[in-house]
Length: 281
Image 1 (cartoon, rainbow, N blue to C red):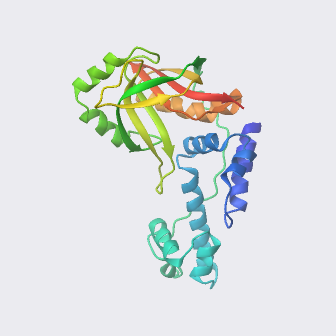
Image 2 (cartoon, helix red, strand yellow):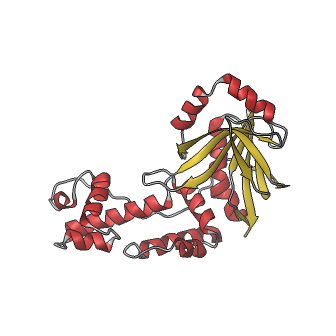
Image 3 (cartoon, one colour):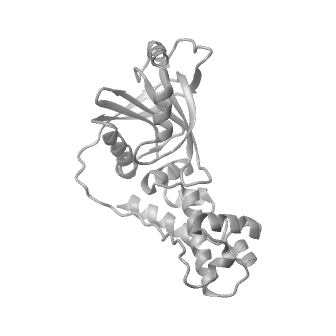
């Protein structure tokens, strides 16, 4: 419960500073975690990146200001951190579907993104089975693509990549596997917050290996780390559910926070392991 309160205190800080430059490090400090962990945890819990949430809250308030008085568009643009009326107008139109000048007219429908709060919901989803492992540095090798991060449902970028990867390539990757996590693994790394609703990441279909990386493959060096390894039985929906619960339930009560590094999914039949790099708070 204390962790939940700290998260909501961080959201209150954001709300109180929508008209100022928001220091993400200070937001994370209030939430008692690293900036890296807070951004990732926020994205999983909210289904939207932190920067996109702040952008939508500012543009929501800007719409209220336009309707409420006669302030100049330039003044409202500067109030919410836009360097020029043109930049503000583009962002405003992308969200509301109209320019700031048109939005002043009555009878037009605008979008509002209310302030967010986190609440504890007991769903009876069952236990999370996990173990903590110390692992030396290792390398993964396979094929990689930059994709959009989707928090629920099917990721079309991943589906397309899996469909277009030849079976021969899967067999070559499988033969490289000689380290844990074993077999063909799915590696997500280099997360970034994009300009749209979702961030992006590098997605690998790969194997953990000590063997030389073939010239036509991509490889990734993974530093020595402590890993929380979660066991999941069931289909992809169960995996997605577990991944969300790790951020929403396990991290706030575990004494750990996310460490920098890739997140890895190893699956065979209907059993999966989610490998997440962690560190003690």
